[in-house]
Image (cartoon, rainbow, N blue to C red; front, side):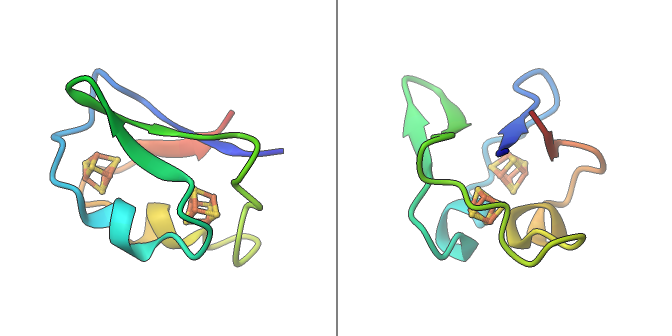
Amino acid sequence: MALKIVASQCTVCGACEFECPNAAIKMKRDVYVIDPGKCTECDGDDPKCAAVCPVPNTCVPA
Ligand code: SF4
Ligand code: SF4
């Protein structure tokens, strides 16, 4: 399992990129995407990217 970023809601603030312990979040073209091969769904019910994201329900289970 991995998380994904809902592109239509993401403001491209970049906060999640630096929070991810696995460097799974990168800018691709003009949006942020999560590499499902690197995401370990860290911190169980409180993933770091979702915790830091200012937009609710934008880093969600894929
Ligand atoms: S859940 Fe954790 S490992 Fe996966 S993208 Fe978010 S911060 Fe990175
Ligand atoms: S923290 Fe949220 S709004 Fe900011 S780049 Fe990441 S997914 Fe987008």
